[in-house]
Length: 345
Image 1: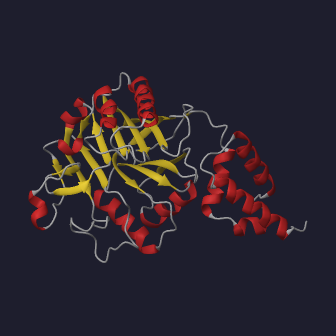
Image 2: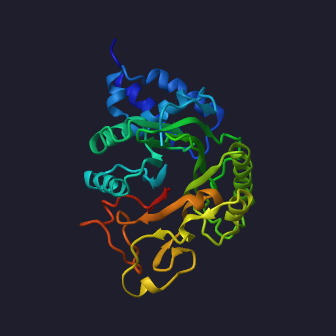
Image 3: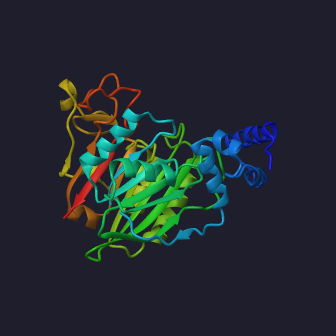
């Protein structure tokens, strides 16, 4: 059957417009499904004109029937890295791989992942057979990005739960929250929450929308984590350490900062910066503004033998300097975030 090129491109343009809306109504999603019925992969023109992100969005809207709790196969624990939502060059991808290889975690948590297909491609290039289990779970991100958990042999996830409570959408807030119930080869159970917030202008805690969002997520995690021995919360929270927005997570869930343990280590800043501890930064001599966290409970802290951070794939800001990978610059940086790690006995 012949394909009407003009009509097809017209529908692609409409799909792009709908996807770029910050706040989508139910009717918007219904229309996106209708467009997907027309723009199916069998139509050559549609497939060749659609980007990876567009296809991911189509996967997302067609998976809206997924239950909140997804039974998993095998999967992962130990670090975090965030991927920007842009087209990545080969040097950027290689630098991402170097950050992960340096840490070599048994369990790896990822944020802002474009799709399962993109994740599988990355792993096949750099970590073939290293992480036999990899799970991509969509979020409410307007670009269709999701989170992922990877693990080596000997680790499995019995359940993945997403925070899908209906919360007023706002330009001021955006969030993704998933909880992984992990069991190790020696039958130890862990609850690991992967959180990502975008709380524009909320550092002083002045936004009731942000406060309510965090309180609702804390309430959810209290219920889901109840009775689990080892508990961890990791992610890019977009909150400074001294902000009152962080207190419900710290106090309500009884968590500790892993970067404040005596076992925390990372290479220090160059020059005078190594003797200075700036307000809102990770540690003395590590003067990078902290908005990424690895929070742990008391029992996990007692079993922790090392906690650290790899920022070699992150381009230093103007005043603070640290050692990076060779030829790293703003165009090929691994991420806008450091990779956080934790090792347990």
